[in-house]
Image (cartoon, rainbow, N blue to C red; front, side, top):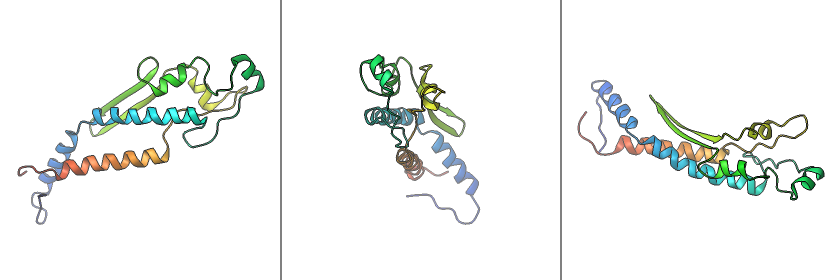
Length: 158
């Protein structure tokens, strides 16, 4: 049963207990689980040749298709897609906890990824890294659920 507080007596203790409980959540494991979901999302972006916001990537120039021997956008050696859909190599998956903050650094260390994200004078932008609004809403709901579950779990007095 959740603790109740009459008036302001004990309110500071209650907030301190909530803060302590929330800091004990294993955010590292939580965000590593999110990395799995993000890898799946990024595979979808490549499969559907679109940005995380749903914008289709610009088609390849005929000269690029001839040079590569295929028309798969953002796939030449496979290095970039592997870095966003698998662990290891150029993949960046770094969960962090710092004070009251927790998060996940997700991305790629492939040096040319930036040029695809923003485009160049000779190449249109084809954003390949990001989070959909749907994924962000799910993440917010899961974080909220983890916090609420932690706060209402049965525990002793403050």
